[in-house]
Each structure stands twice: as structure tokens, then as C-alpha cells.
Image 1 (tube, one colour):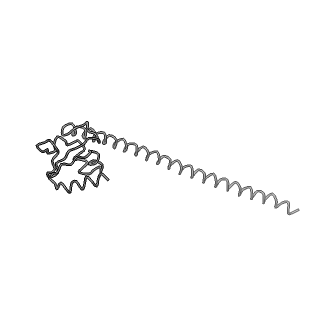
Image 2: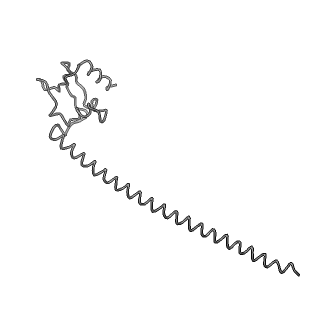
Length: 148
């Protein structure tokens, strides 16, 4: 007779432990959901910040392109082509070269000088060729290297 009396108590204790475990799981699930929601809010905030920065950069790029176009209009030609042949008097040596050859290194002094933006400001010789006060053989070596 004593064994059956303890059986319901043991079952009741096991049930209580299961309920406690379910409560613990429920609390852990709520903490995970809260953490996930916070991470998602942070992600959305970061995306919004990045989109705003991108918009600012695109606006700045547009302004710089407009300024570049104005500079080209005022000091050079806006209808230049990479296929244009330039005749350059380099220290007395005449060198014919495609514009693309001299402008292939973006951001370089050669690219800026021969991009067309400054054509009206570049010094010319009596025949109208671009004049550079440099060693002609050295400039020819640079052109040859860039043609490779």
C-alpha cells in the first residue's frame, strides 16, 4: 500500500519539472526573440544609414561630374574620343599617339593632361602640335611602354 501513495507524488514532481523546463524554454525563446528583434532593428538602421551615405556620395559624384564638364567646356574639348590621334612635340621630337594610350592610367598626370579637359590650355608649337618641354627620347620611351 505505501508504494501507490508515493507514485502520484513522484508523477506530480516529474510533471512539475517538465512544466519548469517548458517555462525555462519559453523564457529562453522570448529572450532570443527580443535579441533577434534588436539585431533586426540595428540591421535596418545600418541599411538606412548606408543608403543615406550612398545618396550623399552619388550627389557628390554628380556635382563633381558637372564640375568636370564645366572645366572641360571652359578649358578643353568635351567631344574627345579615345581614338583621337594627338601629335605631340616632345622637346623637338614629334610623336603621334592615340589619346587612349596616354589616358589609360586613371588618376595620373598624363590622364589629366591628355583627357581633353585641358586642350585649350596646353602649350602648342608653331604647327599647332601639343608642346612638351621634355626629353623627346624619354617621352617616346614612355609612350612605347604604354603601348605594350
